[in-house]
Image 1 (tube, helix red, strand yellow):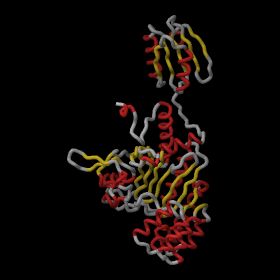
Image 2 (cartoon, rainbow, N blue to C red; image 1 turned 180 degrees about the vertical axis):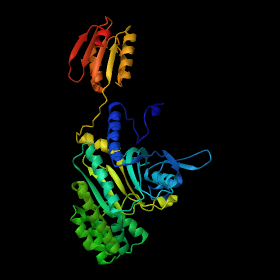
Image 3 (cartoon, rainbow, N blue to C red; image 1 turned 180 degrees about the horizontal axis):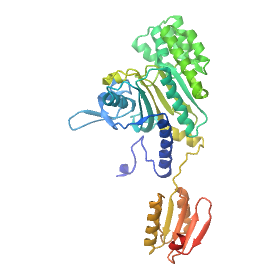
Image 4 (tube, rainbow, N blue to C red; image 1 turned 120 degrees about the vertical axis):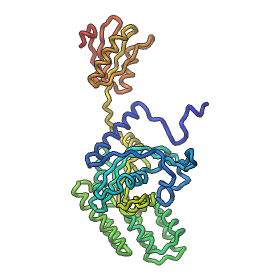
Length: 418
């Protein structure tokens, strides 16, 4: 029975003020997505296993929450919303040849190992631009990320941008087999560049390829690193990848977003479906990225529609954590009116509450309990962001309390108060 009183590991209840702040945060972010012309879509919380199979390029099967329907089909709780959007877009917009702009909010579920200490259920809000393969589309997504983060009060953040094509060009130039590639990706992902050099020495990779891969650690910073990247580019594919980043940066200057952009050419992406630019947003107060995104030009093909695409997801829970630790106030505008009444004054209290609600004023009714003081209810109101308290007493006198300023006044009756 004790187990039933607690949530499973990796999930938690979010309630009252925290929940209100979270919804307020989502509302503000959603407004930015709408300002860019994105349309809402909701996809199912669980899908057929095939939507997230290995070939799609999402997380490993062992990290999925899997279960069965009555027909024996394997279903999974979505670990990532982008494949669901790709599946829906290929189905619902199969014949559309103009750009499709979609945005969403939903929870994702990843069965992390318990020692990682990470939440297994997270809320994500994201946007997907389907049907466009241009630097303008790439820049729009990055500018939208900057606008989203700025709109909620963050001032110190960076969006780090890389290009999968550049990274892949270095891997291909080194002629690595599958196991060697996996090992090198792992070392670079951990930023162990000494380990990269040592490992490549052990498998006798030629010097120029070894120096390029072990030098990726220096390709992190401002726009000047793109010049360095161009200098070590082994082929035209890598040069074109760098050129694309340069062009994106020029457009971001028009948006006024360039000061929040940095570059990291060692980025290869958590998901295997990324094909071009890839980016992560970071700020202090949280150990993980607050934004994850990139281009996935071949993902929709897996569902029957050839269409280049790019998107990102804001990790709402990480954003909440960062804002709290940075003491950035999350605007929570809900101002309830509390109507407190003595026993026997139910009729007056309910009538007044109805009038308030007819005027779209949030109103909470409380019958004063014996043994509780007026101060107890004032503290309660302040705790839950109420703006005012109206106390209807048994002698029909009404005490009006402004919980923000502390100002109080007494009126003779409900009728006089009106």
